[in-house]
Every structure is written in structure tokens, then in C-alpha cells.
Length: 156
Image (tube, rainbow, N blue to C red):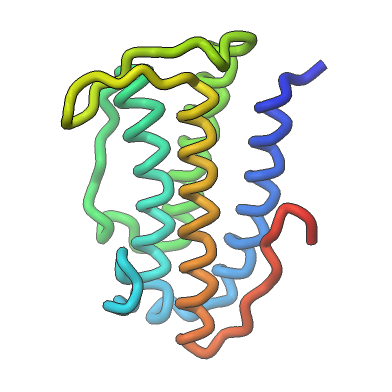
């Protein structure tokens, strides 16, 4: 049987797929248009930031893989963002397989203020809730750009 968190991540992926399908309906100029009312500026920047956060916490802080973090403008198209999400999915598969059955065991995680003991479950929860937070910002930003947001909830 598939692991519980793998199943939960599948729900995150399904919700994300709806968001990316919706984002594909946007004009390119809207995809990259910066809006100061939203922290990361544009739909593209928010999508990249979502992936960057997975890679920072999971790849860099936990798995110590030293990922690259290209600037937002290195991603010109939605397809490039989709590719980044595919890499993120591969990363999460590695993370979930590595810590299967050990989700509550604390790990030393280097942070700016020192080392914190964080469980894989805590890290998993952090990155997926972070994604949903920014997904909401993307939908709000798209509304400001004149689009009608779709329902991207897990239960639609």
C-alpha cells in the first residue's frame, strides 16, 4: 500500500495540476506582469517561489543536495515552470521514500539562527501549506488581471 504522505502529496499534485491548467489560459504578458500588491510580483514568480521553497527546505536543508536557484526571469514560460514542478515532484518522491516510516523522528536542520530539530512531517507540512498559500495569491492576482479563478481546492 502506498504511504500516507505519498497519497497526500498526490492530492497536492492534483490540485496543482488544476492551477497550472488554469494558468495556461493566461496571456504571456499577464503571466509575467509584476504586481506590487503580491509579495513575489507575478504569477510566474509565485510559481517559481513555490518550487524554490520545496528545494530550499527539502533538497538543501534536509537532503543536502545543493540545488541551484536561478532568478525568476530564467523561467520565461509556463512550460519551464511545469518542468521545475516535475523536478520538485522527483525531489518529493526521494524525500518521502527516504523518510517513510520515520516521519515523526526529528532531524537536525540548519537555519539562520542555528540548528532546529524538525521532523519530516513538519517539513512536509510546511512546504505543502506554503504552496497552498501562494496558490491562493496566484488566483487573487489573476482576478486582478481580469480572469475568473477556478476552484483548486483538494475537494472541488
